[in-house]
Amino acid sequence: MKEDLHHYLRDIREVMVWKLDGLSDHDIRRPLTPTGTNLLGLVKHLTTVELLYFGYAFDRHFPEEVSWFRMDADPNMDMWATADESRSYIVGVYQRACAHADTTIKELPLDTVGHVEWWPDSNPTLHRVLVHVIAEANRHAGHADIVRELVDGSVGLKEGNDFMPPVDEAWWDDYRTKVVEASTSVVRQHDDA
Image 1 (tube, rainbow, N blue to C red):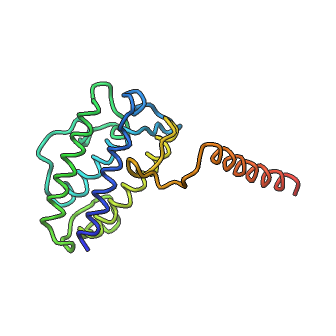
Image 2: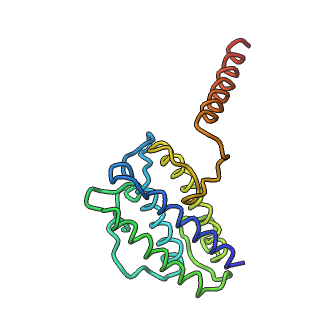
Image 3: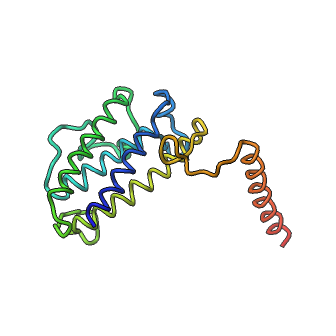
């Protein structure tokens, strides 16, 4: 069971880094939602997730200082990259944090109890933490899918396999028109009622 869970976590980590490929520094940093969601910030945030849940929670602290990983950090500091935090720095820390987490996952049994003080049940097992991190990483991968599509129209899970129907741009234009028409039809029906 542990290997199955770990496999899904490793896959989504690769997706998150891949979402940055081929984009300028501006495009990976620019906020595309009112709350500032951006691609590099999502990777930075997932670095924090790996450090907290597979390091801190199991008393297996990361051996290097991370610029934003501190108690006095501003809220949401891990959701965007400062001008002096390069792509290579953030991706490098993410990959090292993941390797550190992998060691925790490999060395500890799934029933090992950790401590997550901000959870109602503050003593979860590694199994529960692993499931939580997979869910959180996938949630943010969904955000990354949308943000990347807004940046350059790219979609998909992996390079060369977008998991989308094999259709052309005209098909997508027609499809989107149908979706828009359905949404406006419901609004009209509601207004008429």
